[in-house]
Image (tube, rainbow, N blue to C red):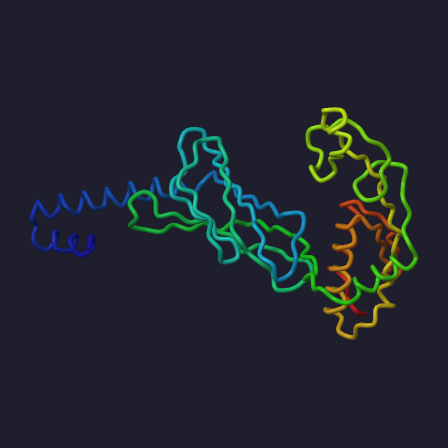
Amino acid sequence: MTIFLGVSAINTGNNLIYLIVAALLSFMGISGFFGKNNLSSVEVDIEFPQEIYARNEFPLKINLTNKKRLLPVFLMRVNVAGQVAFFPYIDPKSQASRYINISFPKRGKYKINDLYIYSVFPFNFFTRYRTLDKAFESIVFPELKACSLLTLYERDRRLKGDRTSDTTGYEMDIVSIREYAYGDPMKYINWKATAKTGKLKTKELSSLLYRPIIIDFDDVVIKDIEEKVSCIAYSVSRLIKNNTPIGLRIKDKLYPPDISQPHKINMLRELALYENT
């Protein structure tokens, strides 16, 4: 429309049309200046959660930082792998965060590098884009699939038997009776002792020490590699959740039995990167 009015002003020599064209060009100039400035000095960062499983949606955290000293950021959108996070306003020298739900189709190492930001600020006449030359990597763990392997190991553990520890816990025999402390489960209150003393009393139970288990990858008889990896990953996750020390022998590596979170992450990472060579 601006070009059409400009040609008309030249052909007709009408001063009013010249003024309208000048106003429109000024409008476009202001829009370009502030729109370009809105996209500058903006930094995007991505934070992956600690555990990502194939074919399961997870919240991906998008951090947008406005590094400008004076001007805010308006109506900014961040496109990450086809998903969009919207930031309506960010103060100068500040940061805002949004979450988007995404998923990956299979296990392994993934890289997100198709990032760009765009905005319709200030007048919604143009959408300006800026591509970001950044890449973010993460390892996707195998999909957890329930299988008979877990039942086999749990049955084997029961047959061999477990043993109790002198440390207190919530599983086995009564070690002592003590006064109730805030946070103690209500089901462990000893009502008989409470009635005698007039004060709440709690049972202290001995903790159960489960026998350690080592899963040998090559000994698991499942032909399909992806099914095998998913089954072992599920068993590892469930056994650690039940406080059973679990280890893994895969290729030339051995992870000794443990129940810690870093140990679980290391085994799942090994399974995620496994290649049948």
